[in-house]
Image (cartoon, rainbow, N blue to C red; front, side, top):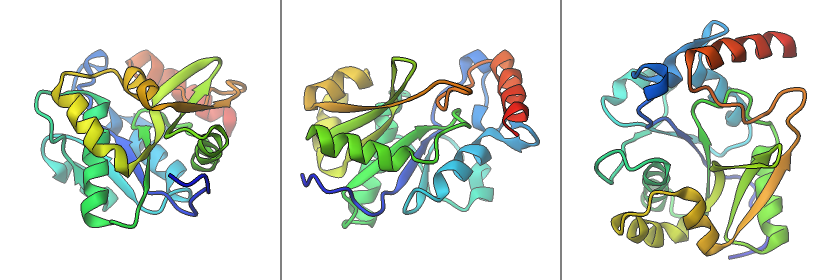
Length: 208
């Protein structure tokens, strides 16, 4: 894998979770400051990525307003974010064979930084690793990361063997960490509960 930073990288929004702590349903479609959470995430990523994809299971029509490809997991049983990442990597390999990398972001992170993709690539290139993930306040966010398309076969084998932990799989291949400050707002604040949705609304108002 080259150490050069690619000029453009497709983005994958991971929206395939079950949202149990939010009471079920499509958490990314919950309203935040007058728009779905997903709309905030897409807006943050669109200028950084060479096209966007959504990973979600069930009827893709509920995301039709975004005009983006919607990819279901190819691993049965809600196998978690790794399954969504595999779906994105497989789609790129088939539809865009020139794409070497995919960046993933959780669909419940409306404050994702505007320099996410560039800094993930820079961290990976500097460390000479296969992968990179984001961190803030000393905590790694494994689902927000950079993934080489060429590792999709290894990821498929890992999922078939029962692997579900992102951190464990990435450590096997080497993962660089790009760190962001958590003030004034943690850029990787994620919304899991109604209380956190209300908190995110307050944070948005403060930022504005």
